[in-house]
Amino acid sequence: MSPSHLVPLVVTLPLLGAAITLIAGRRRRLQVAVSIITLTVTFGLAVAMFVIVDAGTPLAVSVAGWPLPFGIVLYVDRLAALLVAVSSIVLLAVLLFSVGQGAADGDDDTPVSIFHPSYLILAAGIFDAFIAGDLFNLYVGFEMLLVASYVLITLGSTESRIRTGVVYIVVSLVSSVLFLSAIAVIYGALGTVNMAQISERMGELPDNVQLVLHLLLLVAFSVKAAVFPLSFWLPDSYPTAPAPVTAVFAGLLTKVGVYALIRTETQLFPDSDVNVLLLVVALATMIVGVLGAVAQAELKRILSFTLVSHVGYMVFGLAIATEAAIGATIYYMVHHIVVQTTLFLAVGLIERRAGSTSILKVKGLFGAAPVIAALYLIPALNLGGLPPFSGFIGKFALFDAAAAVGTPLMYALIVAGIVTSLLTLYALMRAWNLSFWREEDDSAETEARIQHLGTAPAADQVGERRVIPRIMTAATAGMVVVSVGLTVFAGPLYDICERIGSGLIEPVTLVDLGEVEQSS
Image (cartoon, rainbow, N blue to C red; front, top):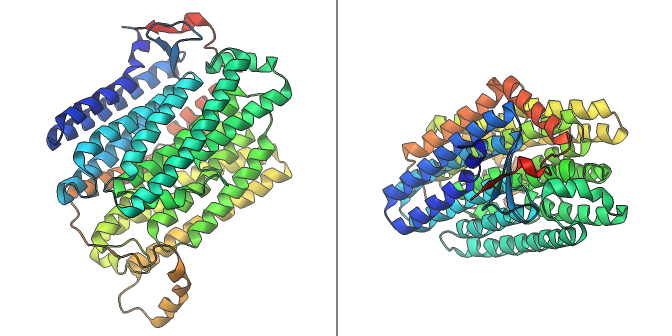
């Protein structure tokens, strides 16, 4: 069997798993087993494909045997294989977390008969987006994500979840319409939606037409990536979902948008210069996001705003547009997927132990739950960019790439990145201090210092304290270990990311039809 035949399995296996779990209905153990096996096998496939493409050429297959430009091309290079592997790890850890939550709480928060099929369809959409070789298939991946994520974000059917779900679906549909419009115009102008052929033919269009198409795609993908000012929907949408859903959304969904931006800038429009615009947008995304985090009193909202701000680092690296910068962006993207997911899982543990995620209401957790304290502290320091963690390594690499360019705007972005990192650390460590170190009998002076946060959204949120199953703690601890591994094995991982950066700068070669295998 040709290695290219492995590629469609990345999408078809989760879809098959979703069908089985849907048929299984309320047979919880079968659904859990199918979901775990599916994601584990997908991880193995991603590793195998990475070994193959790292040693040779990318894998490409035209599904159902249709010739280009009509066939649906699935394309796996180093970047796609790496992101599928990392996504599989994250999805598996969050699944285990949700299994523990479901076993303890029943179907109140995540109805198991709905959760597992939706979750696997979400996984299939993520994987399909990462391996899409043409714009229309990328659009299909986004729509799979949209349908599954709407179901997941409204699980439990509470008023707040339905309300935020409606906002999320409307914003996503607007983005989808923009994307589909861009696809239609590109096909009308170039006669193809295959990314490699678009890259080859784009130079035939007038510069102003290229710019319009470029901006259409940038806007569509920026909504999905939560780039300022198109990030307004995220801080209100993510915190209302169940803890495992929020974790996987925060870790992966915005990164699918960032991934699409990377493909757009490096392969579809390599000669179109909108880097100054991207630098300005990156600056605004970093600063506005982190200032929003500092003003919050609820942990999930704090993390949601830091999520927005750290997308700014990735846009920053993309705008530098050098091989070193692209490699640093990929490394930081992997770091952020893992660490952001880990933090949301840790906050899920805090919510169960304390009955709240408001830093004004939670007190004394260090003595009551020292394990949770460690599981929050390590990724918090990592996200804040404290040496020697992977957050520091990624940011330093981005700053070094920017300094090599040496323009005044680059230095302004470096300063903004340092300020954003310090404010992120401040927001997360303030939450640590108030939630874990503060005791019930703390002085009135301490309470007065944080009184201004009382008007922040969800500042008075208090819920029910619940038992924490061991599997939830184990899943979170496993993600902490993975996040530390990004630091311990930073050298080999960064070498991989540098090779990815070099490969993305080179022209795409998929237009040679002989390289695309026909798959039935």
